[in-house]
Length: 303
Length: 243
Image 1 (tube, rainbow over the protein chains, first blue to last red):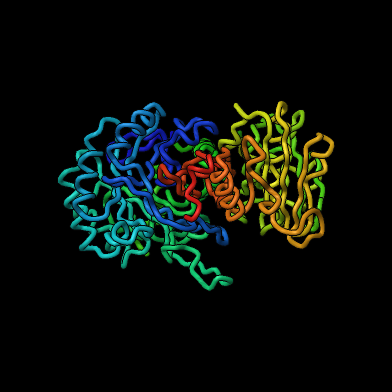
Image 2 (cartoon, rainbow over the protein chains, first blue to last red):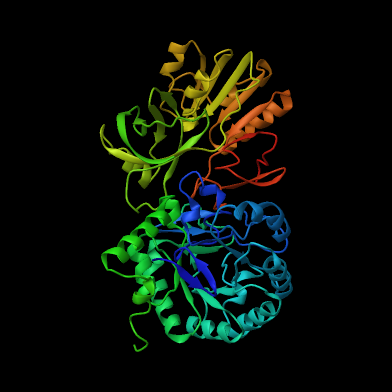
């Protein structure tokens, strides 16, 4: 009923754990059967290990949170050796999220990861707002993004999904540019670049000045962006941004998303995604739907 | 475990410190913690509270009102429910501890000390507790026969000053500490100089609580560690305190 095809990969359902919020999957094994998920996006990986940002890394906001982790990860070779074998036992699709500091690191990282057995999809992260010299720098301007996507496409032996930043100059143009450069899907949105100030200390909360905002507060904007992009491209769109309930997930699907990713909601309730899968199943039963594709992209292509 | 559980009892100990006891089948070890919440999506994140004590079918927390989340907790009455995730993290390692043990705490860092004392039955334990003004969370120690040394910054009870002013690490075989980071850094340094092993329970802002999101990183000699999943208790010589 909920089975979903994404770039030729069959997912049990359209609910995917968003990168950076679910570790490598096993962390949540004590709380629910993570094999029930449609897929898991790994913590953002780079070719070389990264220690991430200094200082405070999380700040709570009204209906949201800001994070400044800065792509802390063990590096792709260590991921392939230690984490991937364990992830493969979880019984769900594995989406390897790859970031980079320069085009060469992206290309080498994607080459390594996409060759690994067990990786189903590569998600290219050109949208992390928390690393100064990379990440989002590639996700603001269409021509820069397109050149990275094209370079990575040549070495990527798995379906390539590009994760877009809401901080892009024009997210629709960005999605079209990525599609033309060879992306098989786009996922959106990553976190919004945001600022918080410690008024007592008269300093920014974060060492890195800005940080990425996520959570329920971004949902309506993310939904609008997904709707705009879904009308403009011919590749699948994966919706991300503040999805907390099955009703939220359904909104993104109605706006044109083939699948959704859930992140911050897992911090509110570790079993949030299980609840979303259950809710979508009940919805299909109640509405007598054999597939969610019946209600996907139902707003039409006209404004 | 992730569950919605009822409040057994809830009492206000001082102006801003409360003891909350919930009915839960899960327990945990001393120094482990739970994520708790008693509200919807606002505030968004749960609050990490260390285990204060464990009874038959109950776990209690000692918490200080710091902001919106802990303020909301104060409204809970017996029979109300709250959501708990836990027990989480790696607590104090009590194996191999013997003879004279000091538990050095600052402020609400006294919270895990009671369950810790109960978990050290063969040891002679001294609790060295510092507070700014109000003193709380110590009455059970007198019943347990634990030595208690108190320091308050305003001198209203015990010695006037900091807990580190009345603490001599050389008198102990091991030290366990929980409190504000600058205080624990001093305790760690004193123990290092005296050659006494010290375990420190770190505090951090957390989101997931299970080691997935990496927002509670702390710098250690072996790179960044996750306070929630690798800690919250670390060997004090492993922690890079100035970071």
